[in-house]
Image (cartoon, rainbow, N blue to C red; front, side, top):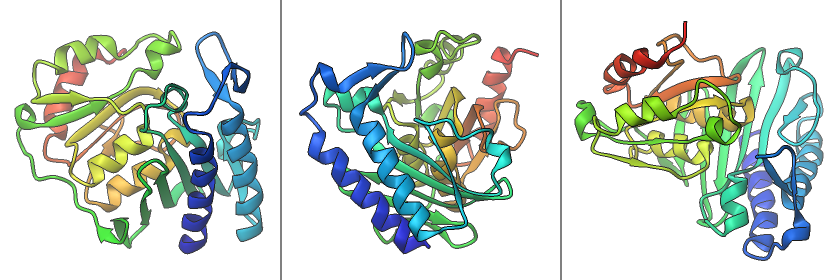
Length: 260
């Protein structure tokens, strides 16, 4: 299955590359007042749904751009973000990705993230490790939060959801070496897995944002939990992914911002 999914993700990424930097206003619409979607998102999701169904006929599909019911209703399912980082894609920022996760009975078993602009692929299979273009991944060994390069995002702010990430971000920024933002949670998670980032957190993400990347972090030796430290289930919500060594120090700060 892995080789098929990697090939399909690469083909989906080729569609994105063809349109990158070539969109006009007719190609962009709004799902809500603050959430954008392009015809490329929809085209890639249709492509992935068709190709994955042909590759694994007994698996269902759960993607960002359609109505597929509740994730809990799917026993064997591909959880897909056809274009993670749509805003980046629209603005010509190269950090966007195709994310394909595969779950069985609520547990992620396979994850593939493809970065079309950079022609890079990250993948993991449960129990078999995580890889970047064939090279085995391992999280960083940074063990002091003050030495950590961390990443976050602000989907919650864009969606006007409360509580949002701003109060926690405002405290964390004084406690770490630096903060970066790609605009694609799937890429951020891959960068934790590869040791580029030491930690990534975000509020109010969806299953398709993290289905692949979360497994890649875990298989690279990292840790993924909710902001209260309980294991994250790969469904919607807020979470933190790290190398494990700076996890508790971050959770101590996050505890100031968790609503009971």
